[in-house]
Amino acid sequence: MGELEDAVMTRVWKWNRPVTVREVLEDLQQERSIAYTTVMTVLDNLHQKGWVRREAEGRAYRYEAVSTRAAYAAALMNDAWSQSDNPAAALVAFFGMMSEEQRHSLRDAVRIVQGPETAEAPRDTAVETGGENPGSAPEGDGR
Image 1 (cartoon, rainbow, N blue to C red):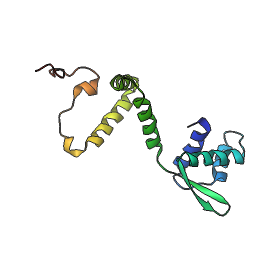
Image 2: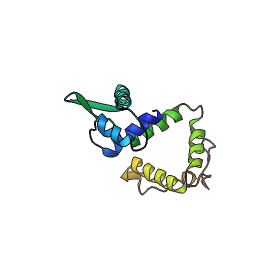
Image 3: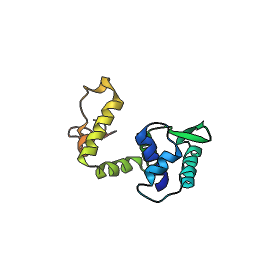
Image 4: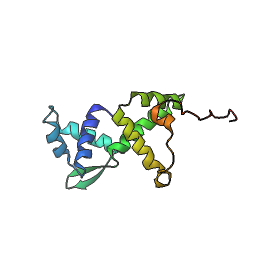
């Protein structure tokens, strides 16, 4: 998604309701000089790409997000990760770039995905600390 597409989608996601070209235009014009036809073209492109759906209202359309910003971010991360020739190394490098707050968010997300049945399971300190888990044997060494 390009910079202008992102600026338009940011508004669509933030408002979380069907929007008109005019509404997006007026909000964007607070930051930059932009033409109605430019915003209309961007929303049409986003519709063609499947990011928004639209419904006719008179001679115009109302546009609504097909998915959330979180789903968009997840798709970007998944796409980048799937292009790696070493996904594990890519994840380790990505985790290394995270702030402490982001690592806490990651832990919370893993707990949510694992579900309540694993909530009481012992934590894997190797994942939590980024280091080796003392006392655990490497895979396949027969211990």
